[in-house]
Length: 572
View (cartoon, rainbow, N blue to C red):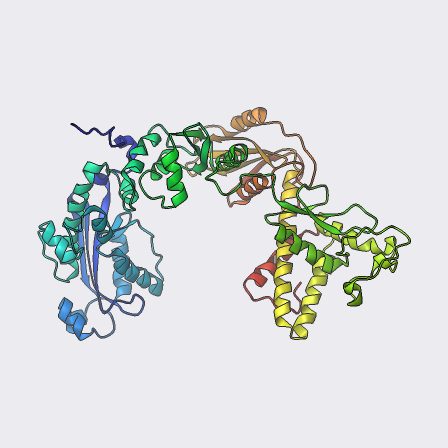
């Protein structure tokens, strides 16, 4: 029986990515004074550059470690202190090696050892580590070879197995040459199992079942474009939704082992088809993902399945308002918060700062004759329940909350900062730290709420970002929702594209609440895209602005608090 590429689920070469025969590898080996990167030093570097089985160049040099070489290392490598005395130090060798290896896949036998020393040298001498793709021949050998065939994965054992032309001898260049032959021997073993590209090589390293690998054909029809993918189960149900800058490449990874999460492997086993939605750019893909998650609520997605969720802090509608945590926002609400606990913490901080009552009893506007609670005894509540505070006097507290949320005043922040100062002067540092963190969380919540509301208030906004290839990505945003998206490739006049996108954009009618009906998560995604460096505002039908007294002025304070450098004197 003949096995075909279709039986293996093998993809055609135009789908594979970078063919292995066209990939440049730099195989490197180091000799060192010991095994601790950053403490021990490099004494020799040897490297071989190969592509398609052809040696393109070699790099070899001794390195002066500027320290002694232990006798056991001398016996192992044969490198003596006299040999490296006139050799260049690593800070002179490193730039040349980085240039030699630039743009190639870095290969080493026990790669973490060699890359650990190279990274440490870069850090010590002020060079940026280029973050190349790294392939470890030890790991590859353990994946490809059986225990019976290769009981040991030491370089000497593998060199004997593959009959390398060079015998490894603990000298950098000879060991690198031997590793080249070992690499080629291992790669030859991968052809029959359908690994033909660099991407498939890295995907193959994690263990994966044959059944999972056979399902790679489900990705064959997907385009190499940005968008959203949907895994569907036996009953056409949506199992999982995700986004990708390259749909074909990302989905193929699910079938080749790079995905190690157990629940996702379970999902892949159930999947019978993968659908896709091609998008103009990353923002459209993110927004479409959110909407599809809300529509289908796939069981294997853990986030964003209910965009209208979240918790809000609102003032109750009564003579003596208090703060309440609710699911449905209304005008003047603060939020959204991801958890009820976060909303309750913010409500507690606001109540402390403004003098709002925290009890839940209904208090009549006049003639209240209740019994004061413990907070009144401690001076933290003026007991309107007992008639000690009238509606007019109490009204300053809810007004302070409304003004803070609307960006008309920052008085609650100032009062909470003053409380921190008092606690610090009293050397009550643990309590001060708790209240500092509570204030920082409150500032973030108000800041985010104000920024989202400012965007949601705009009837129409058009923004553009460079696509990195001389063209532009466009987004039409209406009341915080993405209404249209498109691109103008290099050489295409952008403004006619903008006009067409605006004309075809979704009609968005404002609703209720601080975000006028827009899903908070979608508005947040749009806002992050707009705030990225390089984004330009093409058109906005009304001025886009934040309140004059917004929480943005406290962002620097939050940064200091998070870094643990905030002082309690003069915090604002």
